[in-house]
Image 1: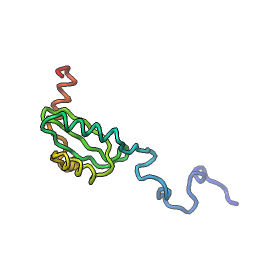
Image 2: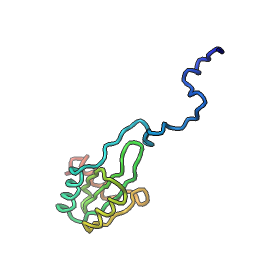
Image 3: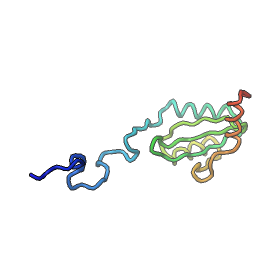
Image 4: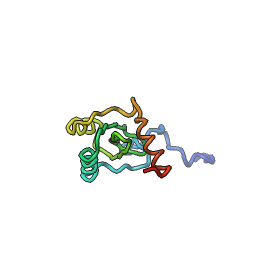
Length: 122
């Protein structure tokens, strides 16, 4: 048996640095999936607000796919959804225009709403 170097103990013997077979691609963070309460919240928002648009946000290292709904005045809500396809179908079913947030970003009216809320104007 040879001499063990300082970092030899941490090396994987002969393996590359690929993730384990059953490890999630999101790293060590486990994300919560969408549930019925999320869906009901989105439906309530669409039903009670005017001028709602949907922005589908892709899965990230810390979050599953989300649907961001923004009303005409900038008020917004965000919830996890099962998939990008599901989010667009939800929006179509509720007659809400939907966009890919990674492509178009979020609307200025949402940022303005957040600024007003932070300043105490809402």
